Amino acid sequence: MSSSLDRKQQAWSALFSEPVDALVQRYTASVGFDQRLARFDIQASLAHARMLAAQHIIGAQDLADIERGMAEIDADIAAGRFDWKLELEDVHLNIEARLTQLVGDAGKRLHTGRSRNDQVATDIRLWLRDAIDRIQTALKRLRTSLVDVAETHADTLMPGFTHLQVAQPVTFGHHLLAYVEMFGRDAERLVDCRRRVNRLPLGAAALAGTSYPLDRAMVAGELGFEGIAQNSLDAVSDRDFAIEFCAAAALVMVHVSRLSEELVLWMSPAFGFIDLPDRYCTGSSIMPQKKNPDVPELARGKTGRVVGHLTALLVLMKGQPLAYNKDNQEDKEPLFDTADTLHDTLTVFADMVHGIRVNAAAMQGAALKGYATATDLADYLVKKGLAFRDAHEVVAHAVRACIQAGRDLGAMSLAELQALHPAVQADVAEVLTLQGSVQSRDITGATSPRQVRAQIARLRAELTA
Image 1 (tube, rainbow, N blue to C red):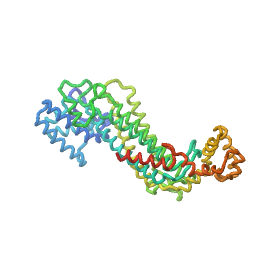
Image 2 (image 1 turned 45 degrees about the vertical axis):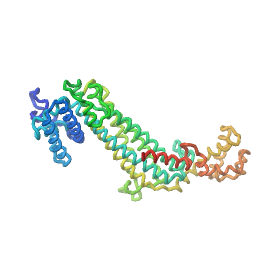
Image 3 (image 1 turned 180 degrees about the vertical axis):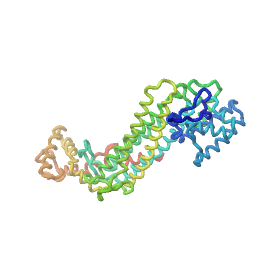
Image 4 (image 1 turned 90 degrees about the vertical axis):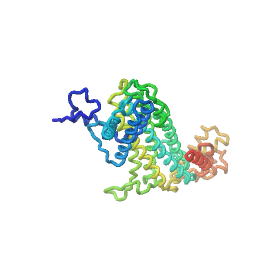
């Protein structure tokens, strides 16, 4: 049989004739997870109080009392001694109730001209703005780590793949720079997302604005917002900014997952291209020879989790009429977990990538096994006057002969190549080596070591700007 809780402390209790059922209290409370908004709730409340005083809506002494009380609350929360109460529902009412205990009527006046609707929307935006900034720092560290390893391996040869089949030779440095570009686009998306996060809802009140002469621009300026939400209905009900962030975060994690998949493949004995530091791996409880790449594998799994959070927020919002609805309480846990997961993943990967150990011989051997210079031979014949389709056919015959003989194209003699087509001359040897292949691809964005180093220089300038 359920019990009930006293409604005396509720900010909205006067209308109701019976207390909230205890199970309902637990079901509807958010204080268990929205405590992390406390620092931002205090910041926003102080900015609101200063504006109220500047507009002569509250007195100077009220403001002084509020500032004093909030300083004590902030210190208690930071020290872990604040008494969070489930019956007070959320972070906002917990702080307000404690403030009123400390400073009396001044604490009750703080809520003048605002609602929990615009209050929570403001707090979430402040929190997310801070989270984006921390994620950007972690993203930059990961990109820098990738650039560092790419520079070390600007000349290291490996097979480039399409369909997971050996295609053409590339350098390991060039391959890693592809991820630097992906994460660079992610950084751009987060910058753009942050602009839309950074708009002030406070002043919208419950949904219609307020009759008090609030100075919303003053509050926006003090809190560092770049703009003000222009429609009060939209201001309290909008969660586009959270969805947009989760979409950007999901795409970052997709890029992490693609890198993870390659690290797992490259570390397997079938490839043997790399090894990861022991501190990022685990062993087997039954197979003593195993070294499992747990961090990349788990990152692949966590990508599904973040993508799921994006879906959850989209479904959460799809059927809501204007303005605020209690459904929106469900925005926080997916949003918080997305930001935490992304930040932690990027931080771990920035360190792990720096520790990659490369087996250059295995990479080069795999490229030789896959006839990776076949396209170079076709291009060579085109430069000698053949149509590309004819050159393609000639090289296909050459590859077939090599497969039957169990050797690489570069091992064919000049006479054997000339037997396939008389246009072949002694200079063909220059294009049949892996080194010659990558060196020949010397246009912007290509895999030649010279171009890789040029891209690294560009990226270092960008990352240190």
